[in-house]
Image (cartoon, rainbow, N blue to C red; front, side):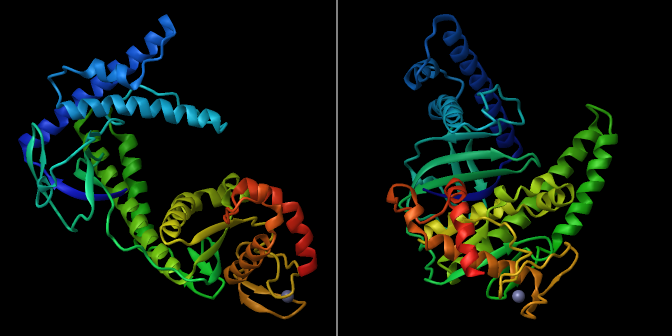
Length: 392
Ligand SMILES: [Zn+2]
């Protein structure tokens, strides 16, 4: 499945119709959820998807497909909830009632007439919506979603199957990358990628707006206006970050088939206050997710490695060279290597990654999975320490 997203420009009446439909869907959602919860409590019966479909059947208020999707969403919310329990995640996320901020889209789960997509998009009972159709859809369109953002813009997303968009071709080359505050990415090949420039200005603007927002009176007009402004800045920040992230992913994946990265979870950077802020700013985790996703579609791989000592160890001789965060150059008194701190870290990540990959015996049940996940890596780490010794 591939999603295409376009900005749409509804007329005032259409916008009103979209908002109203969304509100009806939201109310229906809450109604169904309440029913599901109650039936379970009272009779111990868990309403299935089919039962929910029966409930929405005959609802004349909403276009039938859209109301079916409301039932699907409840089903999905429960499925996700159970998956999280199975995985033993801390945040279980029991399905909750939706307010107008958390319910902001309507979906048609089965669209068949793709003629209705282009410079104008057709939505039943609302009409033809002006669309900025900036790229052609390939493949078979399956679902259509209209969404309203917090900044009060409207978008349509169309999910397609069997797209003929060409995937990126990757290579057999390996690389280690270091993610950080000074350089967003430094590779073991000595390439440096800085943080997106407009970010600093945007973060400043956001700070000011947030302060102004907190001073406005509740339910005032001023507060509403500031909220929309704030949402616009947030959107801009997200867009800048996304554009930058996707482009960087593309650059890296075109060049390297295997990318070793530090496992940020193990690093537990979030506990450190100073770093936590920086992480929020640059959202490294978000970037790694994008990278894994892109790599997968190019048949490449992203491998997480234990980041222990990657910045302190000398990538030439393996000696620990202690340094504070502010010291940008790695200078080894042992082998006299003198390189950028992040480059040194990236080279270490590559070395650790390669060692991990050379220990196939340790992979459980001879599993063919080549990606070393967090848990697998933890199992590896003791053995890995040993092999680090020999490398030293
Ligand atoms: Zn050295």
